[in-house]
Image (cartoon, rainbow, N blue to C red; front, side):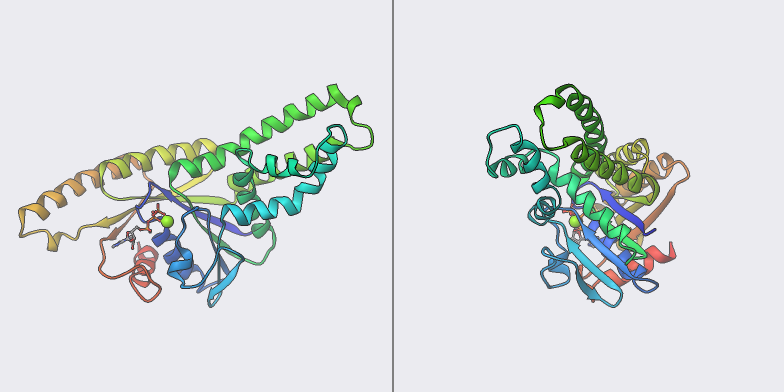
Length: 293
Ligand SMILES: Nc1ncnc2c1ncn2[C@@H]1O[C@H](COP(=O)(O)OP(=O)(O)OP(=O)(O)O)[C@@H](O)[C@H]1O
Ligand SMILES: [Mg+2]
């Protein structure tokens, strides 16, 4: 089974940088897919080509895709819309616009983002999937909504058994079970094949949030590999001016907080670098630092 490595953390800390650098690294030893579930993802800009419509090869052994809401809902329609319409229209006087209505329900796009991840993992095409996530809360919702879905669908089975007589020709249980089975597979994928790196900058909010996220991921059952402290100021550039000296000291105290709270987990450190986030910019350097640390 394909392994999935996710990069999570507060907004702007370097999740995309670490994801792309890691994906470039993994592509050297096996076929790799880079997926972004951030609605304002930037893979298209980094690879200078549109990646929001389909999986596209961006380098040797490396494919990439940005899962936009539109792309995901299109896939949901292909997979479920006909069945849902058949069931609902068997007892309600509704037209196909009911699908547009259901499509707007909270959680549908989240569920299908992870269905896409599952499909890709099960395809057997990739050795590794590197998953660049949206900032913290959106991603945690994405995970916890699966459990919510699962328990709703269990309730739905019970409700169906009570109102069975209103359905004449169709069997909604098949649909409920299909969906429930899918959700169970997604949860299993997250709990058994997925591990996470939590990215932070050496400052109060990103560090505290990273520690919280690591706790939530563990609670959900996703293994946490460790933390990446990104944009550490190198001591040699901070020695002369009081402004940089103070900033350096502050970073070091947040670094110590992270090392203490990491509880033996790996903490990788990446310095603040010059240049741009491009394949021919500092991404190669970040790949090397991550590989060696
Ligand atoms: N080590 C570094 N040195 C210098 N600049 C960096 C470094 N890491 C990231 N950056 C820059 O910081 C900015 C934010 O990085 P990135 O986009 O990877 O963060 P993100 O966590 O994915 O953000 P978002 O939450 O918006 O998706 C980018 O402009 C990136 O080029
Ligand atoms: Mg990003």
